[in-house]
Amino acid sequence: MPELPEVETIRYQLASALPFKVDTCFFSPLASRLIKQLDFDPTGFCITQIKRHAKWLIFELQPDGVILSHLGMSGSWRINQQPIQDKHKHIEFIDQTQKSLKYLSYIDPRRFGHFYILNNSNFKKKQSSFDIDITSPHFDENHIAELFFKSPKRIIKSFLLDQKAFPGIGNYMASEICARSGILPMRRAGELEARDIIKIKAAMALVVKEAIETNGTTFGGGYRDANGAKGEGLKNLMVFYQKYCRICHSKHHKTKVIKITLAGRGTYYCPQCQK
Ligand SMILES: [Zn+2]
Picture (cartoon, rainbow, N blue to C red):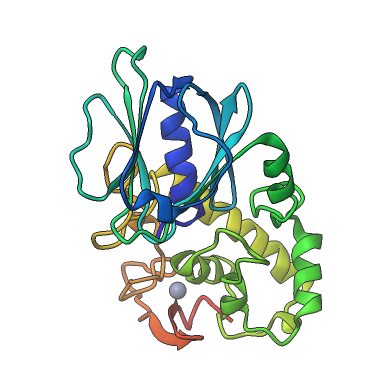
């Protein structure tokens, strides 16, 4: 599933095709199920900027309005010189004025992705329900401490997957954040001290940054970036899907990673590095 770093990768890759004028707009017969609100037909509008909030892509349109796009389990936007031939293509925008990157397509085999095409005033209403993005300056140590203080009994790794509290963090990221901060995933939020919270904040930033630098993380047949390529983020993983911990690994020493299930999700940790 595309998580925050994968969505951010698609955002900056698409930015190379902007401004993008939607001269022609194709919707597949199933697209209407993915579009939750359609205030207007975007034909003739120009995409001037693409922003991101948590796992939402926000296509800003001229003269007015936005397309809000959530990739769900398997969605991706592709930018291409030729029309993409894919039976899972549900939206295609064509810009006749572009020299090369004329085709902007939304591909989604499992169709959990969803869209809102909103005028500015409806977008403002929708935006007021957004929670603080984990990469925002407002998501600081004090904010994390407050979240932990309010829910002291919650298991830290499962709490990191709570999309209301930590929007955009996915399963691989949660294991990696615990590993990088040296904290056992089954500890409870209320047990953590100020110095642990500082480590968690730094680990969150590091895991996001590394994943973006490698164009996101692709597992199995999953996520593809805006060029249709796999991300190289697997090489950043220290414990998730690893046999031996890559943090404490040395020539003379190997620690086996332990896999457990927490709240139904596979969770990996190093018994040596994490306390
Ligand atoms: Zn280790």
